[in-house]
Image (cartoon, rainbow, N blue to C red; front, side, top):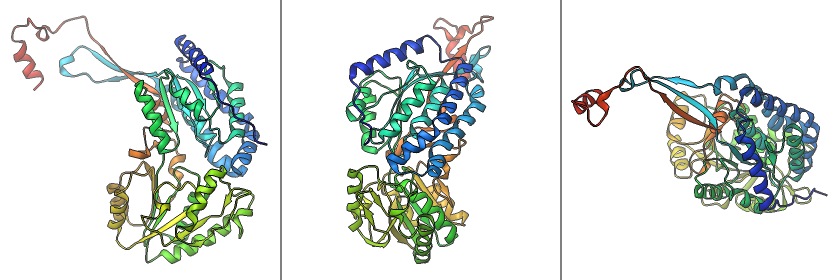
Length: 465
């Protein structure tokens, strides 16, 4: 029996937020040593909760321990360690040059926390996507309220325990609930909102934030193309594509959504992918213990409806009792097919073919900007053509998913796939306001700037030409 996730009342939410604001106003979160101490506490609490995390992810999404460590816990350790090494440098005021008109003055920029940040996490990577933004919020000196997804109730309970063990409730807190709780949270005077989820809900979040002029980061999704050119390393591409598409049963915001393959290598690539699927998940993937399940019956039925949108060439099996759909590759689809109308977010992979790379560019550019793009080629010219002609959040050349795993690359969307970015220094920047200061000298004064100045306009024309 799944643990119940009850709604949190608006009164309770207001009380939580008031405690956070009072705590922040005491200036407790701003000293850099405090931030470092809290990041270390977060890492230790994750370590102490590792097995509970693995057990909860198994119950909610049927994630194996290996996949849970690779895509959830391990990424968090890496993010925290990277931040611990660099946060002192990031938090220091930075001197800047001054213009000739400001001779004698000094300019500098101070990164300061916004205040209390609201982090709304999704269900597909419910640990990583709740706690990775928290790393940035802590590093920047904010307090934070985390809203986990109600669709992964076992993970939600672990996050509550993990956070409450590490932090005081007026500093970092967790608020459980569904849509009603989210709506109540969005009515509050938060100082920053960080949302990960669907495009449709992202629009609701942005609209609510706009009414209070609250800055937001939206990490959304979209139909991320995977393009395989005729000169690609077929066997290696097949392995990396299958990994990227079917990890977490395709329930990944940056998963390859559809395959755009050159017609000369289409059959060879699909044959190789079939071999890899068997290598990864056996001859009957839906019976494989390490193959993920669909999060709930509603999503399962939505995905099941796509299975008649084309000719299934690999997979197509499903088991509603276990909420599993086998890795499925589907041919004979076009842009009008229902499966090509919205982000799939599941283990169904439609295939389109092309003969001219310019056709790929035109097709992708006719549609909303994707969160990710993957290109398999050995041609620098093709690489430059794709990366220079198509707008997308980020991606990989000759790989999938891995661009998200390095703290040196900011991660985020563009257009409908999101706004803002995080990871590494970008997380610190996201949760910081950069305050500009000009310190003027008292040793002398430029009188030409005042209304009564003689020849003031003449001098200003020379300085500001």
